[in-house]
Length: 424
DNA sequence: TCTGGGGTCCTAGGACCC
DNA sequence: TCTGGGGTCCTAGGACCC
Image 1 (cartoon, rainbow, N blue to C red):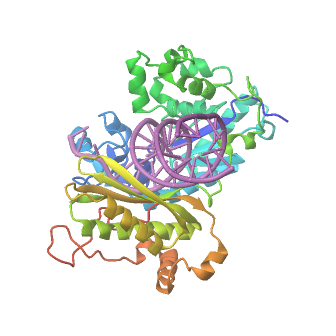
Image 2: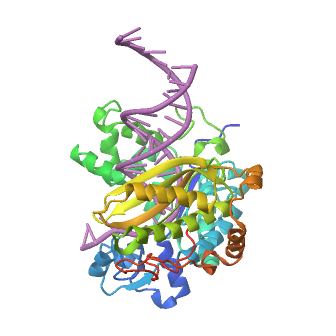
């Protein structure tokens, strides 16, 4: 049986998620302008802005100094990543009561597939199948509000991009369905930037062509070399599957395919220094801490990396990466040896760095036999892992040895984000 | 204004192999 | 001696998302 090309894909987005959670934990923040982000005066950015400060032009990703300038009277709350995941999990649990197919897109965003749910949920009050789904989604949104006490907005459409754009239009705390056949009328007046995948660079390029809205973009021939594949991509995103293309069963559509959590993806940890670093030994200390953390995450998740990549950001914000393929490993010593080698090769005496990062990619599944001959960690390392698995990464901390500007060790760690939770 | 940290996906050139 | 074309892997960079 083929799915109907009706609006059955939903995008659920939690409204100003970090701000909402902080207000839940501290009711004095309710009704006042709130900025969640890096500490004032640090080299941080805004991670979540309440609607009050958005009205003043504060946006997530904005440097904290700029946010302070625009909203000096706001409450500034440090980001607590260790807190938010639990609330996202509560929301997901509610969502799963209503929808059989749920995919987590990010900490505050879920995609839901309601194909085939119409009959299950039908009630006599519903004028048609779309009305049934829209009603169920409203009930789901209200259940999240009542049980988790977090505001969410939901967009419903025939495709993921349409559902996502609809959820943005539904904010705050609303539900918006774009029915089949209404996609173009819905999208045409919107700025091109609203389409998922069109960012600041593409927006700027299109502006140079005099194109501001999705409607104007769709008026360009797909073959126009100035827009590359953009027109075709947007058109496809606004076209229901099954119209003009053979339909796949809902669960086989790429939008909802499960990833193999072990064999794919990448893991990385990076830190911006409090102050730019010009001494290699200081950078090497920081690198050890990063490698320790990222390899621990890899071992915990189960897997080995075939590529180790070092990331350097210089004081002028130019960023380079240097990577190397290695025999699959999750061992701290293996990764550290490569990372140090890459750092020494890339190190420049004349340039100070503001950020250091390590990425493990090309992940493959763990192989039991390898452990027999090459244990992923020596005995003490295994004991440290065990403590961290139970009590969290920061239950054990390694001290840094070198300090920027100091004649000799010891010194305090120079990494920013000290005491922050294990990276996710 | 002075720019976090975690990711995904895409492109492109060169090495290498057949 | 000079010459194919295709495929895969590696590496670097960048756009984009939340």
